[in-house]
Image (cartoon, rainbow over all chains, first blue to last red; front, top):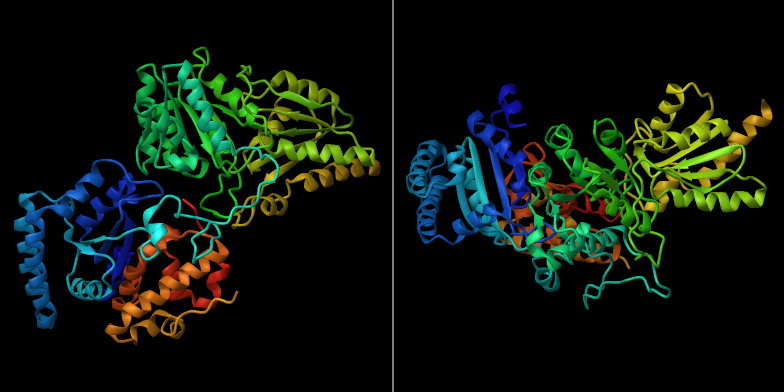
Length: 509
Length: 102
């Protein structure tokens, strides 16, 4: 935007980017800083430093920022700079001249301690108290008159002004509904035991597996509580890594671990995996390294909206050579896929994707069992129509089949488990027996699981009629998961309708 | 429960309304904004801590800079509730809060 303004001659236009210290650990932030510095555009970066993402930030950058904040040399120099800046406001039109004096003052002092941002050709100001609005206004007014790339380092407290939120920042990142006076967070009353969240099944199961297999390590980019790797971080802190908001690094770091014979479980939200795609292709798959990708939030993520829906992973992983692409229908399947993925004989990139939220099994902690790679399973046999599902939506098909039976319709249901490799033996059998196929997935229809089944049909000369249910070719807004499944037409009701429609067609013919 | 913005905040529908205020009124604007976010999120759910942390920053940015002519970019939506309240007009906010959960 700043470069565009310059090209358009809008030299009075200001450009401000607010970035958290968490987001600052991602490579792209540095790519932009590196470029902005040489473009000399009119840009103010406001670094909102609260030492937190959802969980506390980690890494050397965080320590660097803390060092700056507490350095006595720096603080002394800072006062001098602010004194000069005070003059700038008074001088008004002569601001440029004074600005260069300020710049020199800043640079001279800062070069001594080699300020990271200065070396990227940004003028660094701060740190300042991000909760003193009067001071912020004064400082920003001064900075407005200084041309070129600038960075203002603000120290803030996440949850400021709500005591409980300041104290437990992770819990209050997104607390749900609460009583603002007492601070009580409302939880739905639990009367009967509920199935666990898929993420917790992952969290507990990786610890169980790692206890038996010393090669297993866990990796997360800043999502210890979001993906439940925090369970392993607590149980075996030296074998579980939070690398910060840095998905590309999380993937290549895992690749590096795998080259040395370890078996990393790299847990990344499906949507955020998009940031590390090149690394998956080149650093893992091309070398056929044994990295297990656990993609949490696969499919429609609910209230978090279009940035968080994991719509594309089945399609974007399926086309990568060497990659095994799987999705469990329930907790037990998740555990068994995790168990299978870490076996030495598998030794290939292996992805397991599962949705946000709860599974379907209250009694989920069953003994691990190997699942042969590329083998699906028949959930129920039937006639005329076959419903092929991948992952959690298999449960929608179970419900649909139960209800259709009352109407006298008996479709067969297969949980394919793997999008790649597909279970060719099972598919040959299905296409030989059924002329009507319905595929169901919590992922984009285009290029996903249903597409894979259709390709199989074409490649082998079958001609069945296929209805593909899944996420349509558009960005889906936020909403409750249930509502979104219905809206995208792949919930139990939609499956029933698809079955009825297929039957109706046969009547017409 | 009907949620009402504080006396100063209710005068602000767009950033130019904020810029008409006196500098010494800004701390009260911040307080109004913070209370409003707490009220809304407690009833409607959504992100909480991140937006509370940048209340003063948000007010200062819109007060000093000529938004939306000057361009302002936030890294994630869930620290931008204050920004949305100051720029979207308050009536919309309760219906738009659940944007992102990182």
